[in-house]
Length: 353
Ligand code: IPM
Ligand code: MN
Image 1 (tube, rainbow, N blue to C red):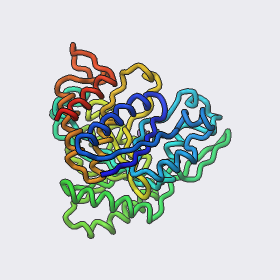
Image 2: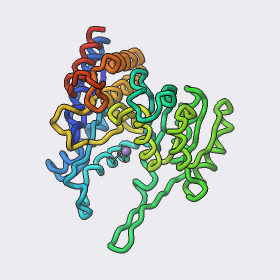
Image 3: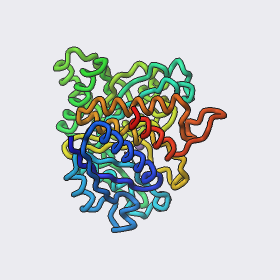
Image 4: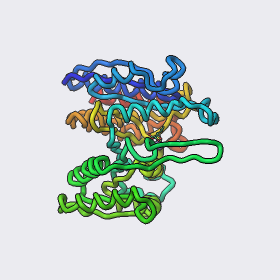
C-alpha cells in the first residue's frame, strides 16, 4: 500500500512524540513493504507565531490531499491567561476537525494487563474495562453561536437531526462489531438538545435489534465509569460531554499518555492522542509517546491493515510489561526511560519482530 501522510506536530511536547509516531510508521512500512510519504504542516501556536493563523490554508490543503493526518498536540500557556486573545492555538484543532468534516471521534478506553496497578482505581475494577467512547466532534457548544461582553456570555449547544443521526449510526455500527451494547449518554432531563438525541436514538434502535441500547444521564455516566467501567461497551455522546468523559476514562488506563483517538468523517482521518501539549514538559524528553504510537496503530487499522496495527499494539504491550516506561507510569525503583528511549524500544521491537 502507498500512504501519503500529513504530519502536524503542533506545540509543546507535540514535536517530540510526533517523531516517535513517524518512526513507528516507517518501521511498520519497512516491515510490511508499504510505501509512505510525509508532508509536514504547521498548526496551533506554532502556526500563529509563524503566519498568524492556527490552521493556515496551506495546512488545510496538505491535510485535504493526504490519506491520513498524524496529529500531535496544540496549546501554549501564553494564550491561556489572556481572555482578550482572539486567536488561540486550540482554534487550529477545531478548524481542522470542522473543515475536514471529522464528526466522529473514536476514543477507546482500554486497560493494559501490566498496568492495572497504575490506575488510582482498584485493580479489580479496572481489569475488565474495555470500552469505546464515540464523541461527536463538529457540533454542539464548541461550534454553536457564541457571545461575550463584560456582563453576559453564552455558547449555544445546537444539534441538527442530520448531525445526530450520522454519529449515532457510527455508534450502532461499532456496537455491532463489539459486544453489542450501546449506551447513549445525554442530559435529557434538562437539555432540549439531549432530548432530540434521545428521540433519534430511540428511532434508530429498532434498526439494530441485536444491540442492547440504554440511555444514561451524563452525571450518572461519570459516576458509573469509575464505579463499574466494565459496564460499558460503546458509549456515544455529544462533543462537550465526550471531551470531559474521555479525560476521566484515561484515569482508568493509568495515564493520559496512553490513550489514542481517531477522528473520522468526510475528509482525511486524523489520528491523535487524547492528551494536550503539556508545555511544561516541552523538550525534557519525559512525555509518554504511547498515545501517539497507538494512534498510529489506529491509522493502520483504519486502512484495514490489521496485522500492522496488531504488531504495534504488541510492541507497546511488551514494552509496558518490561517496564520500558516514561515517568508518568514509572515502575517503582525501575529504570527511567525518556520519550525517545521508549519510542526507540518500540520501533526496534517492530523491526526485529
Ligand atoms: C481534546 C482536547 C481539545 C478538545 C482541545 C485542545 C480544544 O481537549 O481533543 O480532547 O477540547 O476537543
Ligand atoms: Mn479534551
